[in-house]
Each structure stands twice: as C-alpha cells, then as structure tokens.
Image 1 (spheres, rainbow, N blue to C red):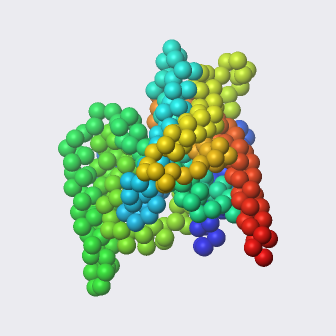
Image 2: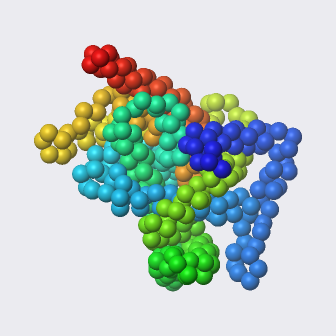
Image 3: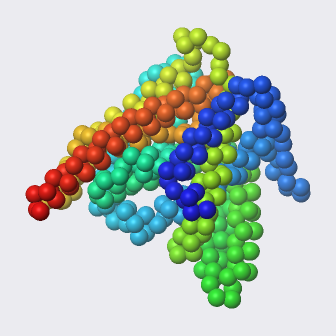
Length: 388
C-alpha cells in the first residue's frame, strides 16, 4: 500500500477517476451510472436516507476531511504553522487567493441570479497540488516547499470555514450541541489509546464518530464538518498514527470515488455562447483569479515581519504558487454541488468548469514549478563547480 501514499500516485488516480466519470456520463452506460448514483440507501431505525451520490459526498468525503483536519492540527501544533511568524506570510497569500477569485466570480455573474456560487473558485485541492509539486518540484529548496505547503493548508482551512458558514441552512442547534458533546467525548477517548485500554477505546471512538457524523448530517450543517471536528479533537500522536493508516484508503479509494461521482456529468449540448455565467466565472476565476490573488497576497506579505527576516519571493515563485492554488478539484467540486444543488443544469456546467479550470491550472503549475525547480538545480550545480 506504500505506493498509494505517494502524492504523485494520488494525483494521477484523482485525475483518472475524474476523466473516467466524464467519459462514463457521456457513454451508452450513462443511464445505468446515473441510476446507481441516485439510488437511495437508508440506515434502519434512523432518519438518515441518502442517495449513493450523497453517501459519497457526505459520508466518504468526511473521512478525507478527518485526515485533512489531523494534518492541519499537526501543522498548527508542531509543523510549518506553529507560530504566528511562520503562518502570517502564507496566510496573507491565501487570503488573496480567496478574495480575488471571489470578486472575479461575482463580477462575471452579477445580475445572473447565481452569485451564490462565489466560494467555488476559492478552494485549493491540497492533495492534487502536492501531487503536482511532487511530480515537477524536484530540486526546490525546503523554504519554498514549506511556503507552498503552508499556503495550501491555510487555503483548506478557509474552505472548511466557508462550507461551515455559507452552506448551512436553518441549522438545528440542539443537534449541533449534541454533536459537539460527542466530538469532545471522542477526543477524550483518544487519550486512552494506549496500553490495555487501546482496543475498547478504539471501538468506542468508532461508535462516537458515527454518532457525531449522523448528528451533523441531520443538523443542516454539511456532514463533512463532522470529520473536521473529530480530526481536530483527537489527541495528536494517535491521530498522526491513524492518519498514516488511513492515507492509502483516502488516496486510493475515497478521493477517486468522489472524483468519479462528481465528474459524472453529461456534457451540455450547447453552443459556447449559451453557456451560463457561472461556467465562465469558474473557468476564469480558478486559474486567473488564483494567480492574481496569491501573487498579490504573496507580494504584500514580503513587507510583513521584522527587518532582516523578509523573504525574497520572486515573481516566478508567486506564479508557481498561484497556479498550484488554482487546482480546485475536490473541494471546488463539493462547493459546486452545494451551491447549485437546486439547479442541476448549472451544477453540471459548474462541474465542467471546475475540471477545465483545474486542468488549466495543472498545466500552468507544471510549467512554472518545473522551470523554477530547474533554475534552483542549475544554481546549486554552479555553486558546486565554484567550490570544487
């Protein structure tokens, strides 16, 4: 299973699954595929009754968010974001990478009635971005990798907050309070993951996790937020061990299955002139908005911090960071589903726009990251020659 831990392999699987979903939705097998996706499965004795598509986006994807939350907590507690001075510069760049794509989306969709989709181009798929970085970034200095990683992680934090705040309708406060209590109990039980209490504690934690997910699912808040809460509540060391064990499952199954389901979209038989405003807004805001926003935020961040500690962030570096940020994929697809759940035709166009916009960003990121890495490799080789 070690090969599935590879960021490169994870990115390739995600891309292949999305392409497969798009092909399947436009093949003779499309009717059967859509029937499976819309088939319902209920949990006996509970009010939970979801379609297969929602079991994937609400259930499976909660596992991905659980693993992502553990990684976020690690970076905040003991990683690249454990101090304000470390986090401030990539945070400014991340904010720029959210604000500018949002503004572009709102400008293009102004008056269309679909402005609620503004969060779609704000997300970065951290798994895919790191995969592209792993494929093309050989030779990048550690400081740059750290900046790019911190930027992607902070972008994920913002995306999680957006999902929790802007895609919640009439939340059931009692259910949310009950879910919070269960999450706290889950965190406390994780303190017992050692010695003779390990197995009983693990069993209780699984039950608590399922209960928390069920409560959040019925509360009006998107169910993936349960995964975030559980990941943040779990004790650091056992959480990192669990993340390591779950990583092959999320990389090799959860994310590809979600990409396959989300990309199960029939290509609209429309002339280009009749495509909706959200389609064009997403297509422009992901690659262009992210590059401008992250580039502008990154440039502003160079003026922050005590004298002598300001990093030299080149335009080339900012272009690489911005293009990586434009790979919206998983989280953008999820936001698209949430924003346009009531308008299937706009949702389908949005899905195509996310795939195309992310594809453009992948190509740009490959070019900028590989040329940047090549530049640093040449500089190191020249220094070795000078010192020899």
